[in-house]
Figure 1 (cartoon, rainbow, N blue to C red):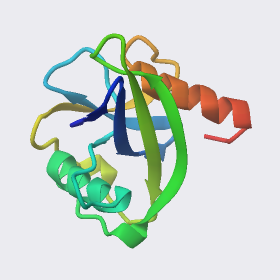
Figure 2: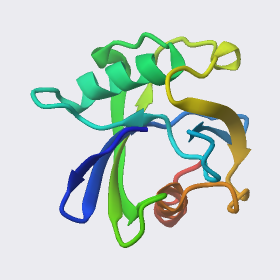
Figure 3: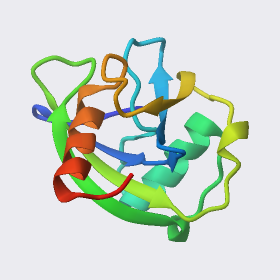
Figure 4: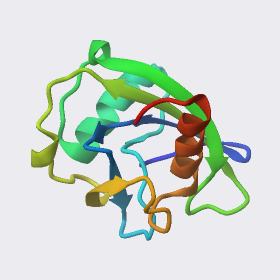
Length: 140
């Protein structure tokens, strides 16, 4: 996931995909932790436009802006940066995608379906998102 830095805040847009109680998470450049697919918003792009572009670049999936649905925004510790936070603007999609056939692209070196309790391998901001979901009582 590429990043846009604003002082000590990295603002990101990401896609949340749940399937059989597992999250679709990606690994970038062989880093230890996995996080949501997505990335930075380029100048002049909306969040949806940025997410469409990032998902195409990272997963080779061609989504349309009207297939994306805002879900939530959370702030948590950035990874792998230290002493920074990241803002995750999270979306879901109504697109009919064969997620099992996805192949990593670009800087993505791993793609996995992970259980929420696999906390050792999930990036801190994604763990914050999971805490948020639990706090509002949303069913996974």
